[in-house]
Image (cartoon, rainbow, N blue to C red; front, side, top):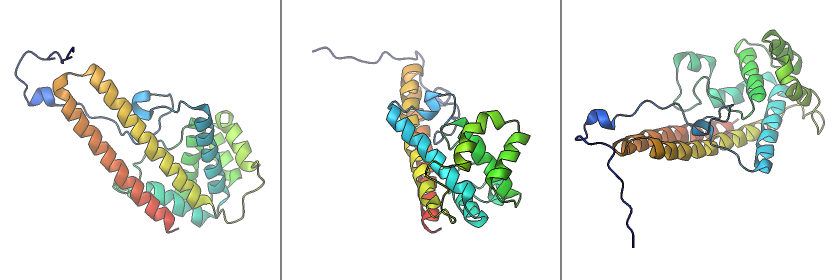
Length: 225
């Protein structure tokens, strides 16, 4: 039987500098550009279609929802405007987190958040106008057409499904975070010195624990809306 052993990556005693690892970006995000170390991947085309369909359905319900309901769902996910200014992120997603797989969908979400922060309703007309102001009309035309004329007809007046769609979206975000964590650790295992592996594992575990805390808190808040 052949036994495979690691060849030491260092020839000097391991010290604290050797064990140190560089800060890692937040893993519990989705990043456009398909950076596998950040977002993992959705290999199954059907699964990707389902993910994109969920994003469209959630944004449609959000834009057609009464302003107070829309604001409650947004604040459950990313906190109030004051929370974001204060950097309070223990139980919500950090400011700037990428929640959507497609960048056009993320642009619509960001625009809705901005309008609500300003005290304005995020109606399809106002969202479209703000996207035009930002030079994003061409990029977001497809999603805004779907929002304005949903495939299954106009959403119900109170968008009763919105909290449930938001919860499903957060579940997808959280699950992809695990894919990202595994992808990141595989990359680290292949590229970094052996002496650093434990430090990277500890750092990645901290990311996972932070993501779990946020996921549980957001799900709980959405369930109470």
